[in-house]
Image (cartoon, rainbow, N blue to C red; front, side):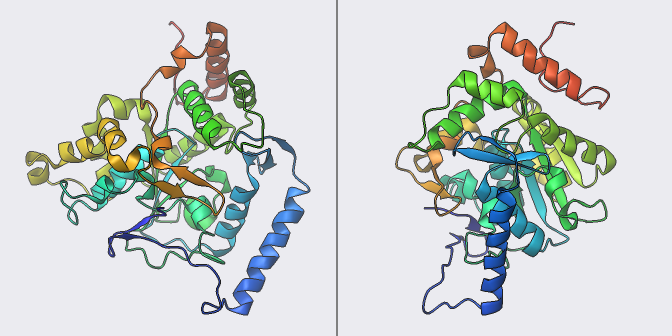
Amino acid sequence: MSTYLVPDQNTCHQPTSITGENQIPTEEEQAYKKLDEKLKGLLATLPKDKGWRSANIYLHEGFWLSPQVIKGLLMINNYFHAQSTDIFLAAFMKCGTTWLKALMFATANRHRYSFSDHPLRRNGPQSAFPFLDTHIFLDYPITKFEHLPSPRMFATHFAHSLLPTSMSSPSSTCKFVYVCRDPKDALISKWHFMSKLRSKELPPLSFNEAYELFCNGVSEYGPFWDHVLGYWKASQESPEKILFLKYEDMKKEPSVELKKLAAFMGMPFSAEEEKGGVVGEIVKLCSFENLSNLEVNNEGGGAQKFTAQVVVENRDFFRKGKVGDWKNYLTEEMRERIDSITETMFKNSGLTLGLTKEA
């Protein structure tokens, strides 16, 4: 069962738990228990609604989050120390995180590994680097990530406004790569994914119910439109700090977008690398077709651990990897409603995303 890769050690990090031989400093453990009590008190005050994976999600500072994720947010704000060279991959759920994790890992470590014997051929791409939202408490009582080489890379689904200023402030030198996609495709992909993870003790979440919840902004890490807009505005104010990508552009011209990504990460491809086909090799290695057919990403191939309770099989991160699959699910009326919300929410922002109305 994978957590995340530690490049210098060429292995996956194994979380530690408290044992007789591994005593946690009293002060640190007490702080953890106080935070746990704070979480319980906080949840009692927050509005709640139906969750897609678990029974309930809670509205915290404008976004719908599960209790475990709120716990992670509290820990990040209290204990996470961003380094000046950190690079964060941010996205709303099911908008390209798996693909970007693979691309960023392969780009950053292209001088460390050969393409024929690459870690991504043996490990699911979700293990390329830590998912900060919950891996922050994968170790007990807190994961400090001191074992990661610089530049450290992390993934998050948190909205920009929820992040601590040490990460999000324009004066901070750490960087963000944000990827988004047509909300109609995000909805379809998220419903399929969360249906697989949904507790068997709960009744299934029908597509029509998921559609209504999504349009009302009620889904884990939602509302979708506020999430995207937050990063879009921040990218306009600090383009050197936030690279804003669209899934559709990446599918259309992966090599062009990869070169843009590498340059932003401070790891541009040299003329020699481009001539030698390195860009194409990374695109091929990280393609949906290649990754989804690897043994590690198929039935019985392995799983990704997010929390003690949430373990996701690698194969569940791969469905179709296509643009426009929403056409197989949405009626014209449903499509018009989502497009109308998108148009209204993004009006005068300069951002266009997924609008399919005829001009």
